[in-house]
Image 1 (cartoon, rainbow, N blue to C red):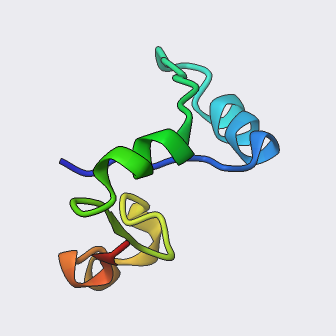
Image 2 (cartoon, rainbow, N blue to C red):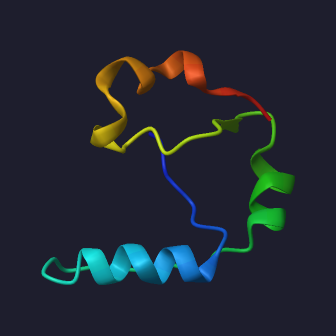
Length: 67
């Protein structure tokens, strides 16, 4: 499973505004604690891989690297 974290509240709220017609759930997570527990299993990517506007070739698992 892959999840996306907004680190900047302003960007989160922009996305929420753009998706206001859809139901949304926002979870606040202590990412430092999360990574302390799951660092060996975590992978990171520099882009939002779920963004369809970037093109399918950019949304590959090869983008994810170990933490």
